[in-house]
Length: 233
Image 1 (cartoon, rainbow, N blue to C red):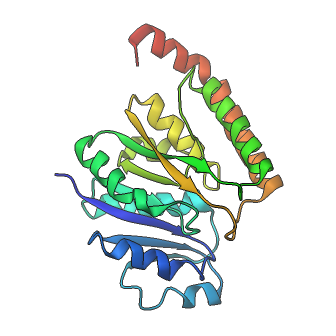
Image 2: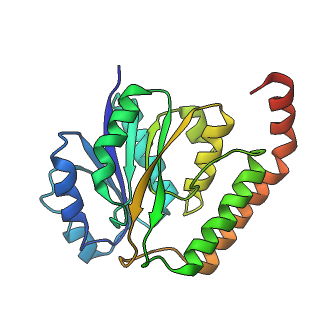
């Protein structure tokens, strides 16, 4: 039976979280927030939100926070999680359409893909293009529109979660590729993206982690291609 919850990975976004919680409350859907070792000030902003809060004692990374939330959802009978990043860069008017897509396509992964305005830094846009190129290579031609999108509805799959090794910003990319390689249908919907809020993307460290993850995927590619050509999956 279809059962969905919102999942918010949270790390030091005190100015946005109350607004986000307020927007999501009107959907009458259970909300899980995973606080990934935020500062005392950022934790104060979580008081009186009337949502489920899970706390990491130390900062483990966005991917670790999402995986914690996914595992909680599985343990509590949810079939899907609707991941929404706490920075509110995405136009949340797309939420009803994504929920409808998920209900009508329960086995599919629903992903927003970015429609960027003039606030988007050129360096970030070029970085995304490079990432999408390597995702295309490492999925043997998979047409994945936005590998780093932070607004998605996942049909929960324990095997895919467990084999996704990434724990930081590269998590979004790796788990998307893993769903694709597991023959899960991926449906896309355009979503507006506005930059200007706090970003915890670490240009050097996170790009190194993304490169290492893509290298792992590249060296496992022959096995994936063999399976795809021989078995069609």
